[in-house]
Every structure is written in structure tokens, then in C-alpha cells.
Image 1 (spheres, rainbow, N blue to C red):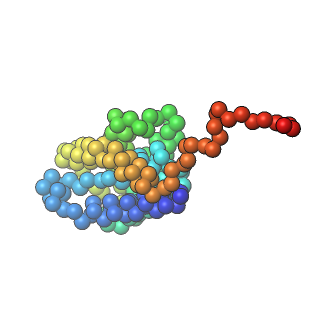
Image 2 (cartoon, rainbow, N blue to C red):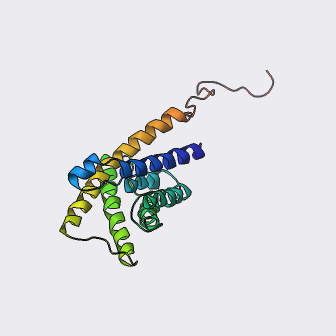
Image 3 (cartoon, rainbow, N blue to C red):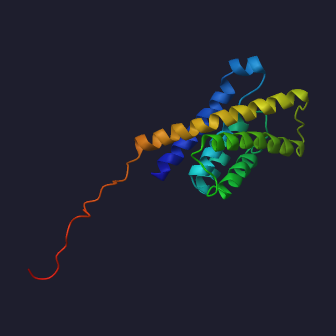
Length: 183
């Protein structure tokens, strides 16, 4: 059921981008918009394949850019780069450890805005940078670190609820004797 998992991840990314763009009470209070796509990229990089990661980076980045003031497509590369770096070493990463999930979420949520800013500095648009940007960057990184384990719990629960479990019991008994030849 790989297509179902991919569909659920992309639907979640669409919902996350929509909530980020429309949920304004917290944004108005702290003057910072939270960003959950990098934490979702961490989950996908550790549990799914490269095609799902690429689909999430492309679709999520374009959806995010369509609802923000970013030029179209500028968020795709940072999301994919963060996910690809994690996926390259996913065999060495302890994906079930809460500390590791939070650390990777913190790292991805810190790297994606920096890469996006570097790409924006190379375009004709000039982002607003100042000391307040440091507070925004720290807030986005901490929220990403706290949200990453939630993605693991939610999608593991969905996977157990919607996919069949393999049969662990076999019909072969170890104490059964097989007689060969004529009796």
C-alpha cells in the first residue's frame, strides 16, 4: 500500500501548508509563522523512499510558495536537500529514538530556512533580515524539533490502522515429525 502512504503524506503536507497560511492567532501574537514541512520531510526521509521524498519536496514546496511571498519553486530545493541528506544515512540513524527524532527535526527546521534565505538573496527579491530574524529562526527550529516525533506517532498509528499486519504464526509446528517412504 505504498500509494496510500504517499497519498496520506501529500494530503498531510497540503493540510499543513493550508493551516500555516490561515492560522493567524499564534502568528499575530509571536510575530512568527511556524513551519512544519521540514519536520514532515524528516519523517519521510527516514521511513519512505526517494520518490516519496521528491514528491513531498516538490508538492510541499510549491504549495508553500503559492501561499507565501516567495518566488515559485524556491522552497523545493531546501526541502529536498534536507531530506536527501537524512535519507542518505538513514541506515545509520536510530529512527525510533525520541532524542534522534527531535535532533533531526531541529536540524532540518534550522537548515531549510537558511537555504531558502540564501536562494532568496541570489534572486532579485531582498528578504527582510535583522535581529528579529534570529528569534524567528530559533522559534521555527524549536517548533520543528517538537513536531517531528508527532509525525512518527501519527503515521505509525495510521500505518497500523490502515495496513494489514503480516501473519506471524505459521502452520508448520516444530514438534511435528515428517515420515518419508512407505509405512
